[in-house]
Amino acid sequence: MTSTYGLNLFDTLRLWAYRNVGNYGDELTFIEATTDQADYLNDGHLYGRTPKQLDDLAVSVACWTWSRRSDMQMYPWL
Image (cartoon, rainbow, N blue to C red; front, side, top):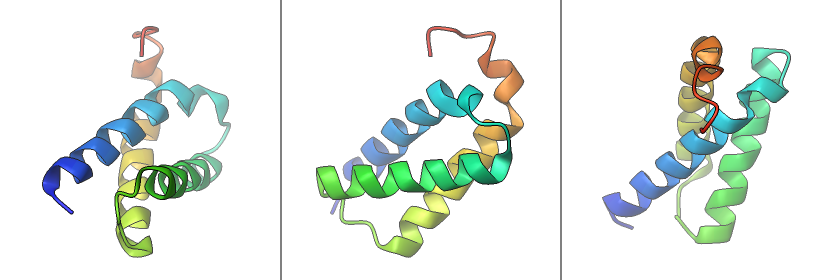
């Protein structure tokens, strides 16, 4: 496992979060969906992250994206 894999997982999850944040009505549901997406990406691409690493990454990405969700509306190409 190299840092490149971590970056790819982070970038892929981050882009997913940007594109999907508007589909959720509350932060907890969005965090759960982001965690599910992180699990899916990890399984499908063999990033090799532990469940704790995935949870930490997903919560971080989800909370950051949720706190800036109104900004995401300004960038429809995301």
